[in-house]
Image 1: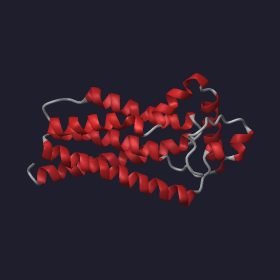
Image 2 (image 1 turned 30 degrees about the vertical axis):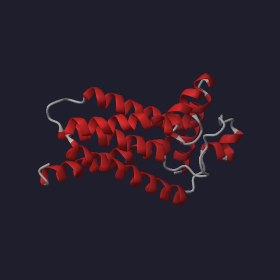
Image 3 (image 1 turned 135 degrees about the horizontal axis):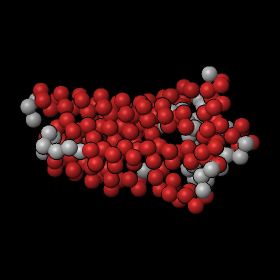
Image 4 (image 1 turned 60 degrees about the vertical axis):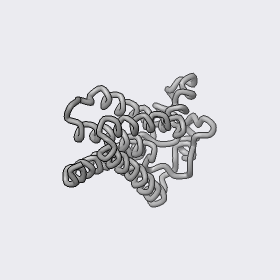
Length: 194
């Protein structure tokens, strides 16, 4: 396990140090939460418009439930594992990790709530469209929203808020939960004949 942690530290440090400083503003914007409110609103409106208000509301509520669950579980993991964030880790600091101002978050970082929320929203909304609207294919939306989730997640490593391992675990957790909740929403929609 120690070897795996060392590899994670080295890869995360390499990514962080080889990030051009000119991109810090880009990573900050991706890492923000308020900046993405228009995207969330647009997706919610599109879900309700494409699926109808009943189906759309069920999918939107499962997306909200997913965000709540991933936040709570990510916080439990952070407090349970107590893995220091890269910007707070003495080894990373001694080896020159670049820590831009104002992005660090709390003391611990395993696993990434940003990554789990982004991938949960991406997978849940994409599956919500796909499962409940057979009249269209949502491949372009799926590519866009998954790319968005990947970039949001990667921003956390570039800004030294998370190790790459933190975002990989968070991404897998969010992706899995998003799909499970999307399938549960679909079953509810079918059972209730909405």
